[in-house]
Amino acid sequence: MASLEDLKRLYDSFSCSGASVYLREEETLAIRSFLGSKSPVLHICGNPGTGKTHVTVHTVGNSFLYLNYYNENDIFGRIKSSNTSVVIIDEFDKYYNERRNECIQAMCYLRTRQKLITISNDLTISGDVLFFKPYSSSDMEKILTQKVSEESSSPILNPTAIKIISKRVGPSGDLRQLLRYVQEIVGKKIVEGGAVEISPEDVFPEKESTEERPSNVHHSIISSLISGNKRVSKMELYSRYLKECQEMEISSYDRTDFNIIYDIYS
Image 1 (cartoon, rainbow, N blue to C red):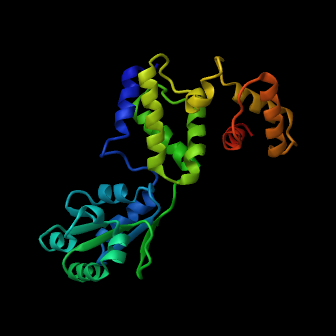
Image 2: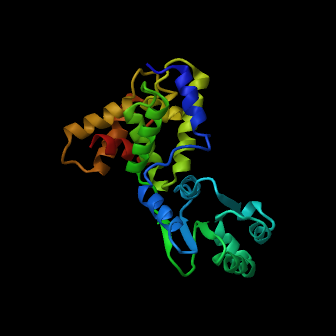
Image 3: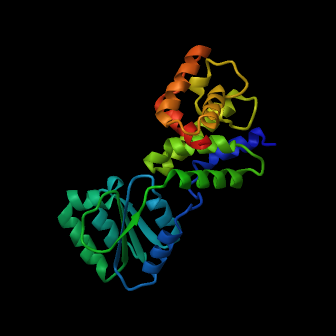
């Protein structure tokens, strides 16, 4: 059985800079291939939270100069004074768009001296680009399951709770958003004390607080409606769900949360 210490360890792991790389095997191989090639530059692009910076830094290793456009006043100066084999410029699209002449000058300087890896959210520039696709809900479920198992041999997050969280955050494709969301839930659980395992009821605490029930009645209603009405549309099931909630005099979930639970049991 999981302990309070397991919860605290999981909470702290979300802020750990040396976190594992998840589900980016192809991207990791592409970066390694570039490092062993004669190509001078690799452009990496993808939405926020897709692991671009973390995977790149983790793959390159120790011998590199990391520069973030928003944190540096003299990027070109830092480059000229460095002797590392690889230079990584984060937020490169902003650097290219806002200080283009200097950016091009820096790229020309590096071409015959050091390898350059650029990281951008939205880049329109010629050349090969390694694109990091957004994480899917399924990806997030796998990652969250793996991360929890790494931190504790005992169950902390109920599998159904993991599914709900993953489906709720999944449309964003943002892994950082997922981890922040789970860290917040874990933090509340630590403060509250009591049962250690995080259940589906803990995922929507603001909606469960008014219901003095030992189990999640909404899951019971929705799963029963699905099993007893195989040929009924999701829209019609939602109408029936709202009616049952009204008859039971309990607050109902909105359409988004209903869809998340529906997808789990359908």
